[in-house]
Length: 250
Ligand SMILES: *[C@@H]1O[C@H](CO)[C@@H](O)[C@H](O)[C@H]1NC(C)=O
Ligand SMILES: *[C@@H]1O[C@H](CO)[C@@H](O)[C@H](O)[C@H]1NC(C)=O
Ligand SMILES: *[C@@H]1O[C@H](CO)[C@@H](O)[C@H](O)[C@H]1NC(C)=O
Image (cartoon, rainbow, N blue to C red; front, side, top):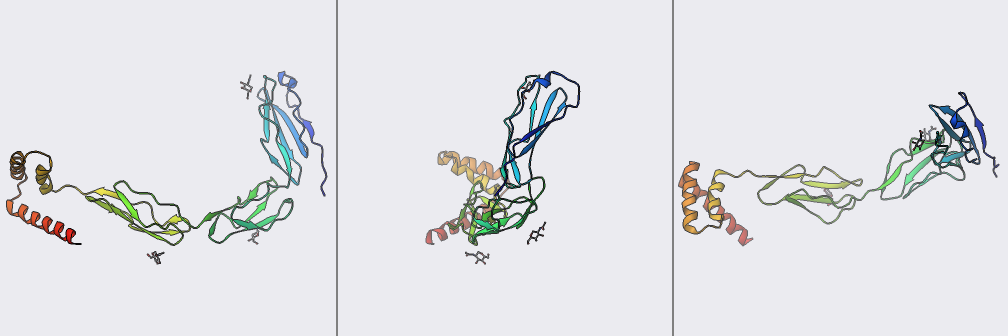
């Protein structure tokens, strides 16, 4: 059972009469007290909900020389604070919230509580600490770094993914990551370009789509400029060949 109060108005005139005296009466709001005062050429009105009710809407409204209130009146709803809400969790509150009520929160399995596990309804109609939320312990798909990718197709709590970079890029950051309480364990790594060696620049002569004669000329010119000797080039080419051979056999 509760009592319905008719809202009433308390108009406090702080300065002498002026234009704003002609502002229309603001709407009367059930279970509230309205206080108005004149300030800097405008009328400033504030609604206060009675104990046991909380305000929904704008508490303060203004009326200036244009003779209209700048916002609709709020309403006062039963319950000293807004009804608590917690998706994917539960709390111990029944019926309208009373001032000083202290409620405790718990999340369902698979969810983690973000915020305080309890909250109290204060005199000013707010919850303190603020109401918590329940966040899934599973992760969303992780991001991909530029020139990189990840392996792993399970993004649930506890699962692991591994990052790799494209050829000619080195991974900087954490390669192996785990989904912990709804977040990947580290920030996204990035893929850094491996600088070209002198030799690679020289060998590019053969990859630039020129005919073999021109490519050979360019190659010899660049080789001379680089100061590398033919023996080194031969050695690296042999290594490259062996690497390709090994890949082919795998
Ligand atoms: C009065 O308030 C309205 C809305 O807030 C505003 O647009 C208007 O410029 C104000 N007029 C004066 C004379 O201050
Ligand atoms: C509210 O209840 C919780 C759990 O019972 C308790 O830890 C907390 O101190 C209480 N808060 C207040 C303001 O009484
Ligand atoms: C993920 O990796 C951690 C350690 O790196 C391991 O303890 C855990 O079992 C792995 N989880 C899965 C689902 O493979």
